[in-house]
Length: 137
Image (cartoon, rainbow, N blue to C red; front, side):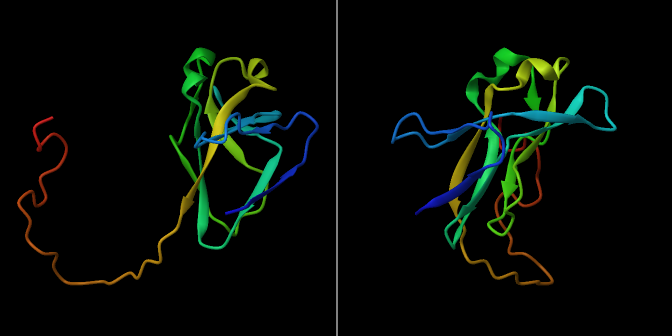
């Protein structure tokens, strides 16, 4: 599998430190304010295009907690057909402090072929519709 990528900014970083790393580190290069207090839309300055049958996910690096910031939508699924710059909504108090830092990572995933089948009823299961905490958390 080849992951094609393009750098759009001189500060952009797209780094895989070890061949065995599952994630590819991304730095943020700029940001814009949003309509929400302390939430900014950060640009990585990177766009990607995985091979046919794959997609990517954007998530926080495990060390992001040190920045007192977090990715607002937890994880971002990036469809193969999207080839624009990767951006991330991040909650933080001091966005300037994040510029140039590798706080995000991109992972590549195989996309199964899925056929949607609408039915009138789902099969009975032991758990049924019991929700949060019902499995003995």
